[in-house]
Length: 131
Length: 129
Image: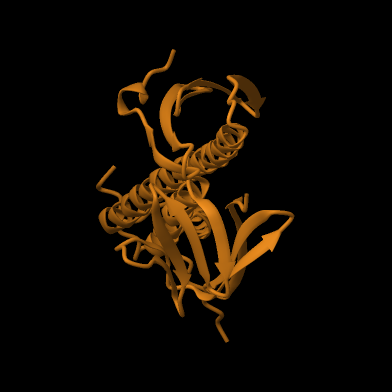
């Protein structure tokens, strides 16, 4: 087999046909991969939303004034603040959402939503009940 | 004029071709595993999201019960989850029953009307009864 000087036309044609097939498969898979690519910040913000929901769920006497949400938990006052690019807890270290823009609390039908822009996409996520 | 079209494949060498071909196959294999892993992660994330919504709905109902000053045990079903809540004084024992059973405890202060503590009981995680 290895004494052959060259391959037959059929063998070469098979290789020529096979390569684009393999390359197109690779290209499709890479595109699929980018669809599932959430990125680290998106993951952190997802966990942040879960924690935010729980935080709001255990809070009482919830009052929203502008970019601030105040509530009571364990007989202490807790304030969550939508700042320029972050939603964090005042007097705490928790940052629920990072690298966001236009963060805003929205109240609709006694339900609280958080609206923000992340990577030029608008999000409005349900976070809990007002009462 | 002699038209010569060289379609010979003398330049084709087996080993570099095999090297490139097997590299591409390995790359495809790696990417496929990555896609599978991320789709699994996405599925897990949607389960977490669903449980989060179930959890806040339950907490809302429990708080509403405490606000009546006469909380009554209740059970309700939402999606795949069956949630039962039992009250003992100012403590509510919550049981989320779905693919797995998760137990949680909420302590409520009926004097100042706010939650003192809420946590999922760690030992209940991982049970699949």
